[in-house]
Length: 395
Image (cartoon, rainbow, N blue to C red):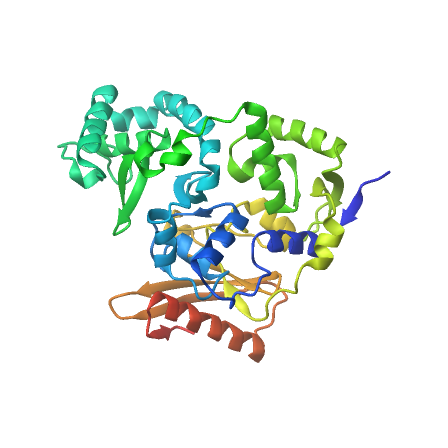
């Protein structure tokens, strides 16, 4: 039998539902609700850029309008139900899965030790620097980069001293964990002191780890290729994901499908979670109104998938030279219902309490009707309130 064809809208709704964007954003924003949201997402990316707001805060606010950053901080630093680890980038991750980072710690240790960028940052005395950092943290408790002095900084971007590189190396390899952040600066402590129960769990065997990585990714994608499955966590190889898909299809857990593309390209061969049709029927309608998505939102992370599912060609231009930018530094996609209908370039002026909109672009075929403009205005007002801005300029 030929695989069933899933329409663009159906695959898009399955994905948005799995990623928490079909739930009512006005539901009560409690700490347990926030934890459930992050568990549903799998993780939320943490990023340093703060032109508008922190990536994790914007991602969570778009799904839970009453969200307060202090709630995430409490989950990370008080409850310890989340920890900061590495997926494709730094992320807040449910602690229930911490032991599945142990294989990554081993892999990262080998990879970092061989990488020329890290070798340059750590310098010629890696073992001595790491031992010194560990000795001080063991004796003094949580410390950050600013607690270590060194006359030399290395690296083309911000300039890292060897102790800062050692702190990140020891974190990425599971020796240290992030105990807290102060003004967004990491404070590291021994992993067994920060997460004693999770740290004590044994490393899963390879097959159990593969099952976890693929099964959890499957639930958070709905429709996927083996490449997308492997890329969700960045924890297994594509060849391993393909092998898992073969087994899961044989067991009836997933079914082969072909997925129509919003960009007009040929339908893509893929898989869908078994029972995707009743799952689709049970999904709520997308909430009314407009929401502004963070550039690091999980819906956008895979640019080719965003193009296929939404017909939305997105590029993050913060690291693109100004003369070559098409839109702007920190462009936020505009979500209306289950469609990405435009983008805007905002900037928060904290000293003046102003949220400035420096540019607004609608996707082809999207008309800026009065209703749509009113919805956008309301979304901007809600964002400004969340960010603590008193005024909006440029609309």
